[in-house]
Length: 464
Image (spheres, rainbow, N blue to C red):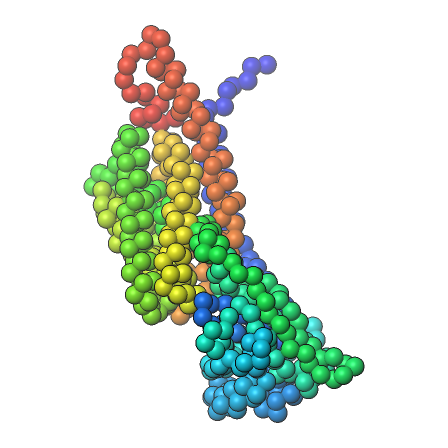
């Protein structure tokens, strides 16, 4: 029985269809569940060059019982504001960091904040959060101190305080605010035999500038790999790079050298744009509101998606990438601004963070390059490109509305898809690899003995 060979274009169309289907399924995936709150206090330390920032997270019920300050699940922001001074006074009486020789540190408190009430298996849980700045005396070491803290445990004997380091640049720990990744340094609890609370001695390793710089390199790489919006903007802007614009439509393709040149110029322009904005905003220590920056990024993705469907600025992709790259650089700078680094640490962090961004960006472009060039040679490339652009435009529109104050399920689904970036890249590589190998084989065959020198029809028309 004779079997008809399956054409390469048919195989690639199936693979492309699988890629679109998987991408759509990941975009529609449910967001990850939130962590279950624990009924104990948490004290998170951010260690800086000359001070330590402590974030106190306290269960409202236990705090109210221990302090006598009326707070519960129904406390409003106005009521909290009225009790803010009393909360700070109470905490000041129960938080006493000192040097190893007993010299007191200076402690200043910020305003308290209440989280949303959450239903748990044991009832309703709500958390009070207060930030404090702990400054050692002249000659004191912010990496070694004694922490005397008994805000709740002196009254609620079953209570415990988990003390952890969230950020410590010198040892390469650069977890950002809101992240759960922290290293525990001790637990504060009451000794039921003596009914006293022993102070906790905090003694952190010295660390080095290289640890901090390398950690920032990894953070920059992760910021691109896990930052779905940055990754989408670059890829969607590169999607039509191998195409030729005729009027208001994409018609035909340019040669491989021209396509690679366009991709290189666009990527370089995006790099220059975000690097410039990142440096200016970081060293200028600009206080940039996050909401307009994030909205601008969503708008840039939406513009790129529309351009992938219909040429808006053909031949000027590099210029547009540079302009929009400024906005993406401002978003990157928000990450550095949260760390409260010294000037030296900031300079090293900027170099490491930016290098991490560029290295990961280069890897992603190299992964996408075969697919961007080869898939444009397919007969049904327009349908595939339109599907990818439509999915991206939908995600961008959802993000834009969400960042303008209109939460929606599309934005939540797009955010959850960011946890599947590695899988999406694997799909991209698996889709492009057969086409790349086929093009190389066809090119060699057409350049073989007895073949006239000239462009291969496989490379200039479509794959059959």
